[in-house]
Image (cartoon, rainbow, N blue to C red; front, side):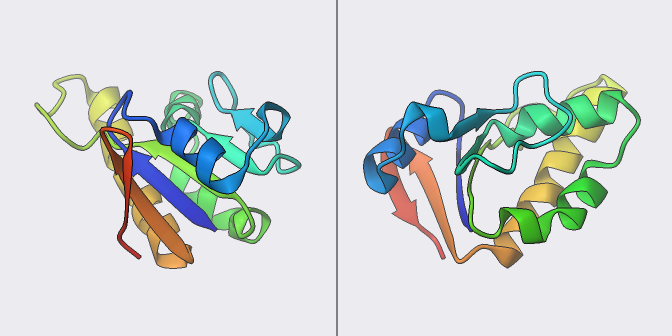
Length: 125
């Protein structure tokens, strides 16, 4: 597994496309999903999936942990939402914490982790 993360609009998907020769039909967009399409090579927007699971009352960490074997050969792209002011809304705080916990779990299991800043990838593992 390769975990690519960074702030919003930093070029994470573009980096993956260029460096891993990803075609558009190989990307699963998490926008309104509650399940990952494991047939795709790239999972894009993991933070959105986490929010959708929280809104459904599910535990995103349990979901990710349960599916680790299915994503070991994937490229996971997640926006880092840990910076800035802590949200006052309880659901948004829960979301922020859950994304951090999921990223920590994925980081422990990833063969490679790349942080993207201004379109530049820095390999941190």
